[in-house]
Amino acid sequence: MSDSEALLGPTTSHGRPTSPGKGIGLAASTGVGAKSLALAAQLVAVAIAVRSLGADGFALYVVIASLVSWIGVVGLGVAPGLTLGVARAAAVGDREEEARLFLVALVLMVAVATLLVGGAVFLGATGLVEQLMTNWLGSASADASTALLSMAVLIAVQLVVVVPEAAQLGQQSQHVSNVWAGIGSTAAIIAMLTVGAAVTSVTAFVLVSQGPQIVARAANGIFFVQRHRYIVRPAGLRFRQHAWPILGSGIAFTGFSVATYVGLQVGLLITAATLDTASVALAGVIVRGYLLEVSGLSLVTTPTWPAIANAVTRGDVPWVRRTYRLLALGGFAYCGLVAIAIIVGLETLIGIWTGTRPSDNVELRLLLATLVLVNGWAHVNAMTLVGLGAVRFTAIVLIAEAVVVVALQFALVPVLGVTGFVGALAVGAVSVSGWILPWRVRRETGKSIREQR
Image 1 (cartoon, rainbow, N blue to C red):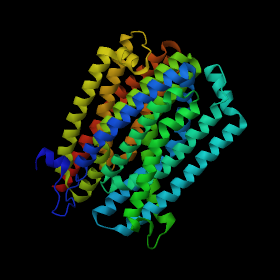
Image 2: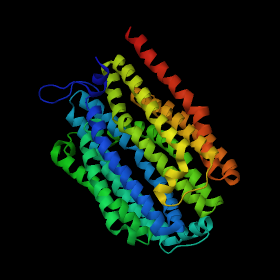
Image 3: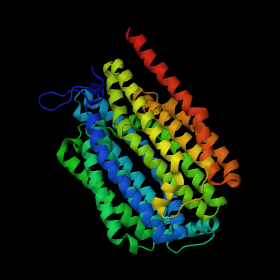
Image 4: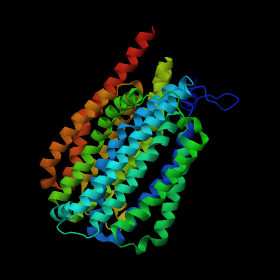
């Protein structure tokens, strides 16, 4: 099998793929377009927000987004478990099992979404949001509670529409959700370019910048159910029996996801609590740029891990090893280019993006470039381990790294500012995940080959 076949996979004359990697090539190719549009939407959003909301308004947006994202991340405990379950059921053609898992996941996500919105309403009614903003940013905003609620509602809807997207990923038909995501990003760009400059409140900015994308993703979910009507008509559903497998894998994956998220979001909150609004805005821009870089790498790693799980189930370990090598080489090349761009002109890029060029900071550039390189390598190995079934081990490693990062941020951010924020992330990646996860991948793939022999 050639390297291209390892990623793209052959198909039958009816277009039904026969390889565990059947959807990776299509998902990656459509994902390039979708992510490019998402990147453009993010670039436009930040550029408009900084200019129309000002430093104080943008800082408020960054802090509220961080707070709400912590609640929304609970939903990660359902989607990965559904993807893994659907991938295994689809491998043996068990539609009934797919339907049972889908319906259980949908009920769980609706419950989480309801709690999220209820929590936002409660916080707004108690006045805690304004109090926090006053303590962290030095001033209160009457828009804070409304912005929190609007963002919570959008994330709640997102939690529900993640269910069909997770099922599509398990079926290796992620290309369909990519197309809808591209439509949503395009609509958001048009909305921001036409009315964004006139936006003066954080609430309005949240709705204009994120609303069209959520609507498009909801449309994808509706059409998915219409095309796969069996998915909502399971036979012999036993909720508890099917909820535990989803939550078992999902909780471990949540630990994985929360751990990777913790350093970024806790660091932002520490920055908001100890530094001025200009520093919060700079940290927010760096985080958004970094997340965009990771999302580019995820174009290939996201559709690959269910395919790896499929291949392991079939005993095709040589395919896993070939695919891992391709991911490692491609990921290193991609992250290397990003790191070079950061070293050469981070401040210039931020100035072009936001209209405000920060002061030159060589240490910040070098630390951020190191973080991009090492974390990219760790990300490839982490997603490979998820496909190999070592989700709990990966979660434990990343949680340990998060503890190191947060401890360093508490010590460094008040002294070194944004440089300390990024430095803590870089030190954590180098000292923990950058070497432990690759070691475990080599061990897992070597063990599988010995078992086959």
